[in-house]
Image (cartoon, rainbow, N blue to C red; front, top):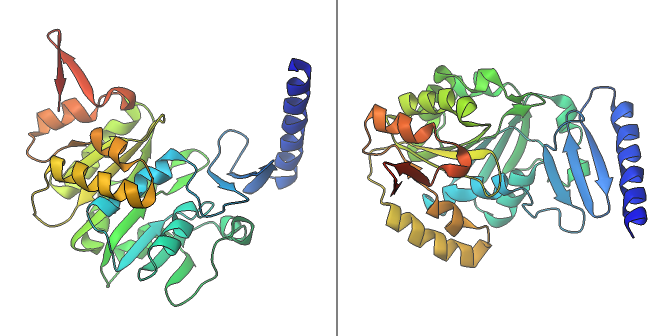
Length: 289
């Protein structure tokens, strides 16, 4: 049995290497059984799709980014930064039939793979634009209800999409009570500068949670000045899980916020390890924020 499993693993590894070398540095996909994955290089999986269920959200961070539904169940418009394998685009297209969805993607080679990942064709309510998100958002005139910020390349979050100027542009592009949902990745040292910029752009109106079993942190920046109550979000999460089964209740249980915090308090909790974000041990006592 062990020999058979080892042989299967070696065969798949060899097949992956062959596809990777043939890509010659361009984004590529790899099929293994019922799974198709998107890669920018040989190191990481950028997106995953089940061939038998192409609209399913497989990666935990994509399920976490749908948390905007806690704040707005029926957004009129969503702007997505980064196409990847189109997981979020496809899912939102299916469950939000009255929502206009615009996807910004700078890499034409990623867009060229859209049919391989069953991404819907352009239509009146769904469009993929080849453009630099930084420039596009800075010159937007129309406001959007939700911005999903997932702008990664092979080395991580694109630096130009992780500046205070960029986050200020995102807030300016949001409708009243709109929401920016940012996917961040890394350890506490990686996350701290991004969190500080988001704090500055959104005046402490941040809610965040670690994705399940992942180094991804999902951060919600809220426009407007309404107060948000954690218990209400957690109650909403229970109801939404009955509809979508995306694990919102678990994510909401880990929610932390900059709302009502001083900058010192914010820094103390925002710099914590993503896996330990729910608890902090202080003087031998466990303190929950």
